[in-house]
Image 1: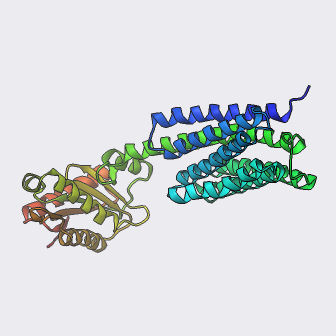
Image 2: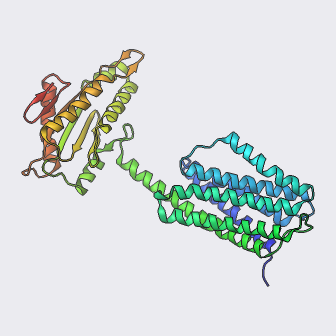
Image 3: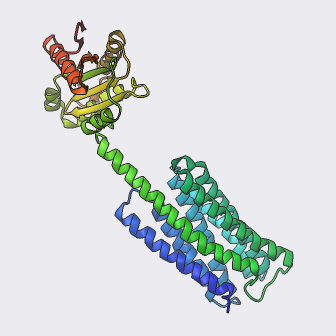
Length: 381
């Protein structure tokens, strides 16, 4: 014996509620991913709305209308979650206004006895919100083409099932109904809702886990203060893409940094480190690397750079950093940096030997008065 649409919709509501609890548990473990709480709210609203619609006697029109209002709110919350997932901001007052504009006509028609028109309008609204959600994911498919294409396809198929429900009601021509619609389109919609909830939920959780793993990889490779690579990440990168003869290694060190920390405080010192990292990033080309080696020491690897071009790059960083002094309550901080440069030669056995020569050049820059660039051959003040 086949199941009727009420049973199928009830099952869809239970699936939505179960997925909501899953999303909540994942969000509680990592509260940075705000889209999960949006999904949780959306699934709770959808689950409650569908259960009310499928279990409460249809003649209680006010309750039936509230079920559709909850479902509309649920689809809006899912749309909001999708916007958060792709990095867009939400305008919450506009979202609340959208809910009122969409739910009031549907609820009003149902309460006034025009159930057929009201439910058909709801199906079209749901389809529209689902299509808009699918569009958000499709535009962000570069992040994970296969998974996001799957999510988009499931959303669009679900939207088509809602459109089919609306079409059947319109073609039937009954403005008023004395029972819930029960036809092939309703059954298809319920089945598609179950498939969509489970499929989209699984793919969304997979996408979130991929993001978390990627974020952890980035955190493991990145200096948390300056956003540059850390020492380990630099060395790992050079194991994968070795230095070649003609590559330049520039070692920078901020002058008198301990004195700056003592005089202006560690907060000012942190701002200076971030400012210097910003100057480094501004000169990087594709394939170049910048890393904080620890404390106030930074290393830059410039691919295929001559001695004159390496000097020009280091000098640009040095002069820009000296010119862009940060402001504190005690006045501007006169921060400067020194640099040592070495070019990899065919006789070098890897990064460490080039780094040692660049570090020796840096040592000479410090001894020669600081705030200057030194190569293995010359000093540039």
